[in-house]
View 1 (cartoon, one colour):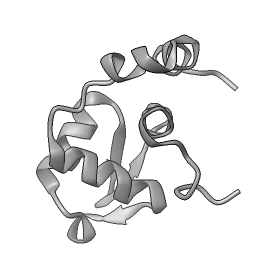
View 2: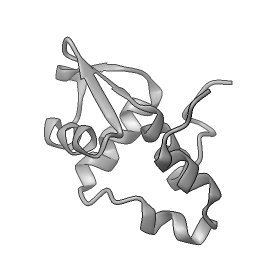
View 3: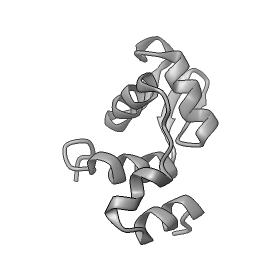
Length: 90
């Protein structure tokens, strides 16, 4: 599987350095990141469209026909910040 440069950078970095690599300046974007970790969501089910827009700009989320979902980079960021346990079913 091909990985993005961000994914490679995060997984090769020391844990203390990961937070400085990840820039999510907006609290609403962090909330939406956690929401999208559970499943794709319709626009109307998001807590913040502004937060979604921030994630899309950063490349951590994408949208198609009103459905919003995390990208590979989004899952890497989620894992680096909080871990995937509890968010992703194994």
